Image 1 (cartoon, rainbow, N blue to C red):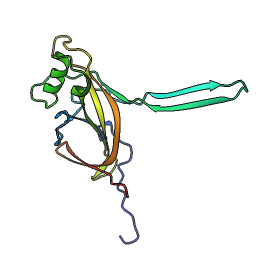
Image 2: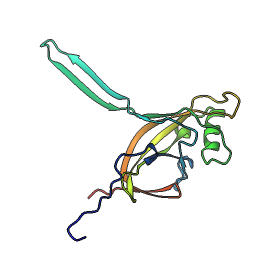
Image 3: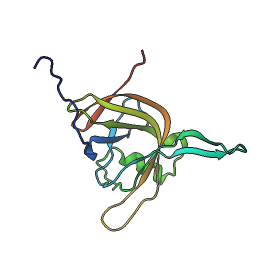
Length: 171
C-alpha cells in the first residue's frame, strides 16, 4: 500500500455524527457532559447572523457584519431523574435562576472521520428553561441554550458517548 492514501472521511454525514453536549456540572472544574437529543427529532444551532444593509447618499450599498448570536432550542426534554442535566434544569426553572446561576458550557463534536479524535468546539453558554409541564406522557422542560463566547476549537475523543475535549494550543 505504499504511495496510497487511506480514506479517513465518512462521506455524507448522518445527523447522529453532529453531537451537542451540555456540561451538567454547571461550572465545575470536571465537566459532566450530557448528550442532547434523546427525545428530539430535529435540533439545529441557529446562528442568528446580525447584519445590517445601509444605502448611503451616493447610492452605494454597505453591509455591516456584526457577527452571530448562536442559540439552540431543545424543544423536548422529558424530565428524567437519571439524567445528569435533570437537577440543574429543574433548579433553574423552579427557582427562576438568572445570570451566572444559569451558566455552563456547550460542547459540539462533529464525527467526520472514521476514527477520533474528532473536530470539536467548546463555548460558554446560558441554559434557560422555557416552560415546564406539557401533555400526558411526561413532564417536558424545553430549554434554550444561548452561546456566550469564549469559543475554543479543539478535538474530542468519544468513548461510550462520553466526550473528552482537548483545546487546540496556539503555536
